[in-house]
Image 1 (cartoon, rainbow, N blue to C red):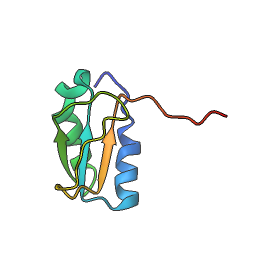
Image 2 (cartoon, rainbow, N blue to C red):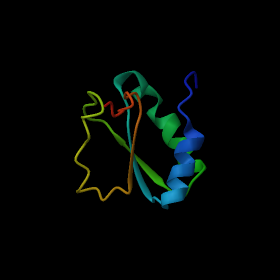
Image 3 (cartoon, rainbow, N blue to C red):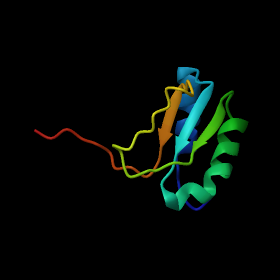
Image 4 (cartoon, helix red, strand yellow):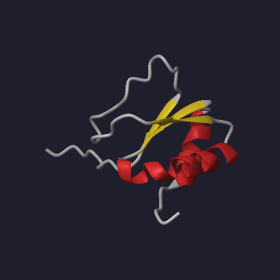
Length: 85
C-alpha cells in the first residue's frame, strides 16, 4: 500500500474499545483500496468490517449508522479539527 493509513493505530483502537463491527469510510481516492484495508483489519483483530460506499465530503459527512449497530466508525482523508481561541 502506498499510503501510511496508520492501520496499526486503527487495530489498536479496535482492540481497546472491543469493537466487533467496524465501519470504514474512505474518500473516493482510497475506495479502490477498501478491500485491502478491510482484510488487514479483519486479519489482525476480532472485528468484522463493513465499508461505507456512500458519500464522503469531509469530516462533517458522517454516515447514519444507527441501523447497522456499528461499534466504531473509522474515517480517512479528513482534516483534523482543532479548537482555536
